[in-house]
Length: 285
Ligand code: AMP
Image (cartoon, rainbow, N blue to C red; front, side, top):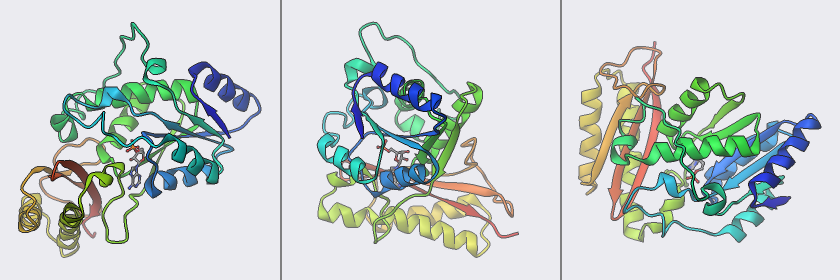
């Protein structure tokens, strides 16, 4: 496995792999790898010749007062995890390599970045789309793997790839959960044992939404009200949003239509930790 920190070395390696006719799959991450990340790595491993994992805690996608400084950084452990998963290339640059003096470009997807995560974290998606564009230019993938955990990010990246004609395929992998249902996240390490229990209310609220849709509820307002109740019953008062939206446009859906996929997403603060989770529901035809 090559562990590379330089952009040029990574591009040269990717060019060589491409010349040899190999398909490259990239898994962009911020490290502190867990089973959620590994599900993406394994999906890439099963369908690409070369698997590249990028590990970069991207300063541009953190807002002022967010957890950039405290974000878990365990590069040595991540490298051995990648080795065990038969990853071919780890690209783990320093911030100065990615954003040298004079860096002045931003890639912005407008519209679907304005709401939900975008309104809670106004500079976040610009940071994501800018870094992902760079990572595509550096690792030259045929396929790029993202988790459904970050549902709005998936919509934004897919739109960017379409709008800018990136010649690659976006593969979206399902949310990996702890045995009790909590969506895996590098941020779960911030939770105290009590908060860890409280956090389960997010999953319960999504289960509630799934049950309501399964029993024929069509009005989003009714679903949102029941989800709010589940969260407040569990002492979660710092709710950022409950979104019932079209998963491609992030536009609100007022009434569910049979056979049409709808994204139900929730964001809330548990203690000081901001958690997000979601599920896709479809009203029976
Ligand atoms: P991050 O390191 O948080 O930027 O995440 C890197 C990638 O892993 C993103 O595409 C995430 O959506 C994905 N990911 C994170 N947690 C999970 C999870 N629990 N299940 C599936 N994918 C995940």
